[in-house]
Image (cartoon, rainbow, N blue to C red):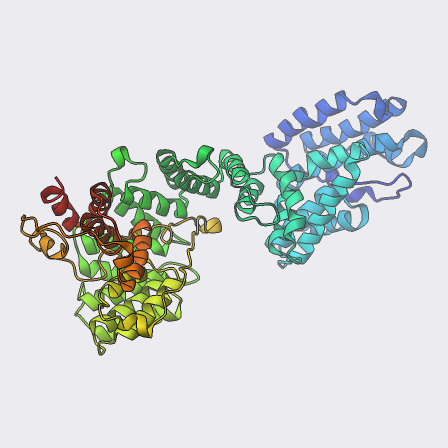
Length: 617
């Protein structure tokens, strides 16, 4: 409670005079903080000129609180003498008294049975005496709509702003009041709230540049939320110069303070080598960070990322996938309320579709895809548009549902409207193969090129195969070369978590299964259109010179190379064929052929495994 030297305040408004029941917390606070501070008041505060009066009156207030009794008449006299006798009061001693009273207000507020009864008193302190703690209390009350107050972000912002800027102004003067403000209002939390309000426009206009200094102050004072936000700012270049090293630093600070989102983001950094020494990923440590955030804090995005790592064998022992563990954590991420990760239902559906880690059940897979698309369990009802693509694939292939090309096209069209590149590519496949629509290669190519412009790896592979089949040059005659693909590397998704489906499409789409699979190893030889079949080697064919390579093959090989480098399993297999046989612009190279076949095999292509065992030994 701030008091002026000429004040004539009514003492009845002081909370010290209310005979509440004492608590152990009150005693510990008073004995350790207030009494110790009073015993060590420095001479520079000018208290020696009125030492007895100041200490007696303040200790009298402390004693009355500990005993649960009102102050005696003698104590009232002492207090009145201190407060209202200008002859015994110096500016410095008044500052100390005000700071101590302010410092205790937080304890008294917590002890009140109904804090709402304090609102008039706090309002009085804010408007009349500008008490920092009262400002903080009212700011929180308006921010959260507590004690019958309506939520008002603008008022809350104004109060946080006053506290923050007042602390900076007073810190320069070195006054005792500033010391009190810093210890009483928990300024680091004020800086966080003020900085985040500026960052996201809560109660004010967005001003990212103005938010950064306040977040830095809070981060340097150990506030995890500020450190987390700074990490995201440096990662994305928001209000600061982009720096992955600084991003890693601040994520680390926030993780040490127990921020689960920071643990998750830090895991993403180590998974992809973002900001780490020499840019070398540490998959085992990334897995550990995801696991800690998932198991200790129940952080849903981390559950999802932990599952994706287990499924892909990233950071596991010997890099072996743990499909059972992945299925378990996908289920937890999909069902943890109030904001489940619906993409986990999509991933779980894929496991059921393929029988990895769970018993193969295509009907259950369709159910998972449907739940993901509807946003099952989410308050906002926001679903996963990729689930719609997989539902279309199920209807297209008759997996878990009756085959129905018309329904499949409906799902793909929904995805097209939502901007899903894989759905756009799938429409192209239906036109190429004449599934429910007349065969129309030019229309198919048009959809493939659109999907490539949206970032589809499937589109690159399918268009490459179209060019390889364009022996009469009709496609090149009627279609321009494909546009430069747009690559989207979305490392982190704010507080909802990170997912790398655009960075490695083979993990998140049916990249290797968008066309009918061979039924088994017996069919492997049929795919070796340039090489041996049935275990017998054909006579070697002359290696094509670059100038002899048809233009349509050059375009196709360029697209195939891109798709393979981005993880498309079928494209890896085709690259192996190209280097094995020295065709389509590739020079014959046994080492490169083996390398691409191994990548295809590791991606689950049985044909590649057959080739490696029978032809490449």
